[in-house]
Length: 166
Image (cartoon, rainbow, N blue to C red; front, side):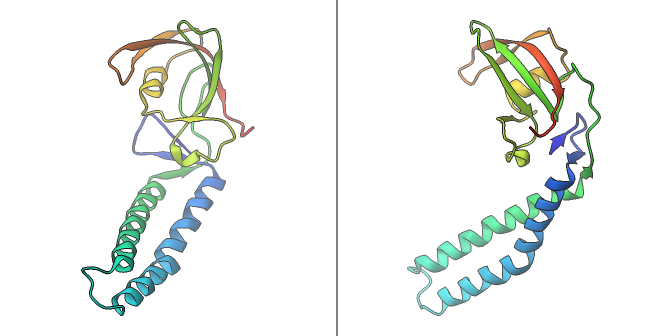
């Protein structure tokens, strides 16, 4: 899954779309039934104030409902196919190789949403400090971005090619 520079569109591969749709169907169907049964069984155990099973089931229900909302929004804004990309320009859906200042080792990763975390390489979000700094930049450019400790780090873009799934 990748997000274009337009935050209202989420580009998904057909495989990612099908996987997320299947998860949503399960959670909003049989998943809701299962959690309702757990809550009812815990209610029958008596005093709800000290009923750990009841509170755990209610918490699980809250997390499941949050995931349902998240999946619904992702799929609502999804476009299935490949995001428009230009080789040599960093953007979502690109395999990017960078070299950090003061380090001779190159690092390669996929710039994409965390929903694509099943990728066989590391995935960096376009919204992360590094992802935001390099998004739209070209091979050969050097940019700096802020670190959590307040310092900045320079990074040189070595390569940017469309992700092929390998």
